Each structure stands twice: as structure tokens, then as C-alpha cells.
Length: 154
Image (cartoon, rainbow, N blue to C red; front, side, top):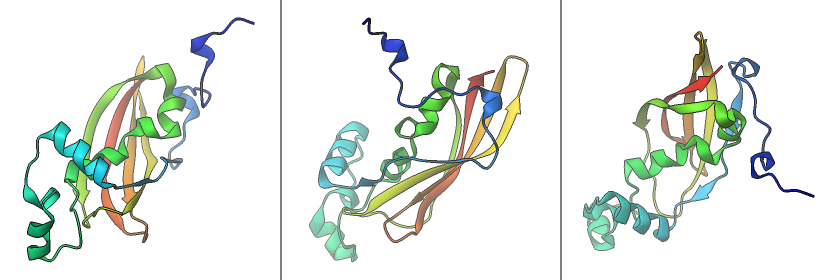
């Protein structure tokens, strides 16, 4: 038997026209560990003590490490969800992102990202898929919400 890497898919790709407004896709949950904090701090260069200095956080009344806003937002990367796999090779690129940070995220919180298709705008050869992003914590609070747009081949 011959192995074909192109046939190794986790979710069958779908054409743009097969998606529907209102469909919801979820990424696996992720707990914000000290390792994730350290990796994000190293990658971003954000050295504000609110993200790593426990004594500083204690003085300000925070219960633990306080997540960077972008650290919370990257939990909304569609590549971690079935949606990106269903877009498959039709995905051309990420066009837009808006976000609002509604509640703090601390070390130990578990985040649950979800994407809802809000618009499908077909053109001649490409289309734009617009998504509502919601990221909840383990208590069900929405800690981040926003919108994303992706360009896909038709």
C-alpha cells in the first residue's frame, strides 16, 4: 500500500458553498499553565511584571499570573479547530481580527474557544468567511470576543 501524505486528513475538506451561517466550531480547551506564560513572554518580549512577578501581582491584589491579552487571543487560532482543516487548501489567508478582552485570565484558568460563521461573502473566484470568536473560561464567562475574516478559494 502506498502512503499519500495529501490524503492524511483529520477532517474532510469542504467547499466554500458547503459552509452555512450559524455553524459553530470549537477548539480543544487549554489550561493556562506557567509554561504557556513563560513561552508567550519569551516569544512576545512583553516583560511587564503583571505577567510574571508574583510579588508585584500580590501587591495589586491579583490571585496569580495575569495573562497577556494576546496570549488569551491566540487561543482563538482557527488552526486548533476542525474549521481550519475543513477549509483545507481553499484557505488563502487571514484577513482581519478584532477583539475585546472582557475579563481577566489567570494562570490555571482553562479556556474554551468557539467560532461561529456570521457571514459568507462569495466573489468570482474567492470568498470571505466571517466568524464571531468567543473564548470562555471554566466558569462559562466570556473572557474575549471578537471577529475574524478569512479569504478562501471558491
